[in-house]
Image (cartoon, rainbow, N blue to C red; front, side, top):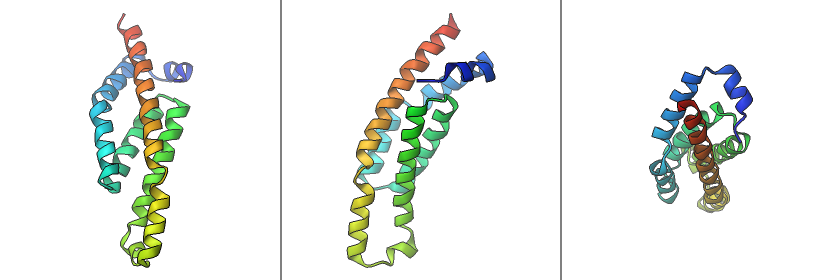
Length: 134
């Protein structure tokens, strides 16, 4: 749930409306399809960039559950990207395979949880946006 008190206390209404509108334009179903594609293609560098951008947008709305999921997913993505650093890839093939499996193991579930909570956040933002438009 969005911390409405803090959000409405510190940010003027017109700014909230503009931020909500920008959030809607950036984080729709196509955004999550791109994240899913990054996971499937093991494109963890772009995945990390996308999740970092989403986390920054979510933090504004002070929704602790979605923010925590975004942070967790970003940490997982960062660990994977760091794993594929050239210095790290010099490790033996066997260690690479074991580590990769461990790092990727929970990624799809955290992604699904983040998607679900972000979509819930969007629904809540739609209600807030409607209140301000009335």
